[in-house]
Length: 122
Image (cartoon, rainbow, N blue to C red; front, side, top):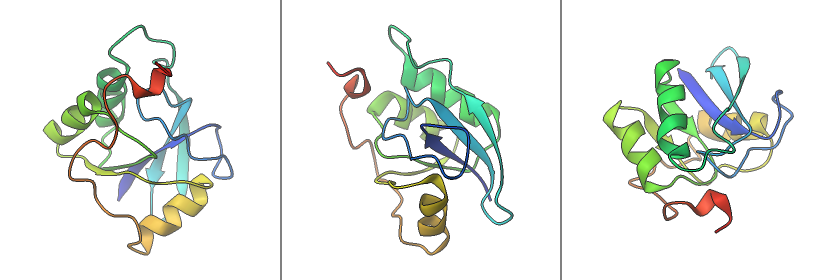
């Protein structure tokens, strides 16, 4: 399955970024083969709309699921509209989050788990 994981760095050993819209990177690839490519998220410093823009970035990459720590309502709606499954509560390294996903220990979110603009520190 093609997935995206929010990440603080460019490798599977990087920590999961707890923010979706303002994550430093998205590691996008195949959860079965562990072949991933890091994509720099240019929305980290956006004045607004980071969640929507980041949602579009990962949906344009053709992902079927997103693993992240937290996701606000605008990003969640963007992902849902594209039929992308959302898994919140991911933590640890990206590799650990992928393993939790594979083993069914991450639960699919039924909505956003933080309010709008929570990733800005406001």
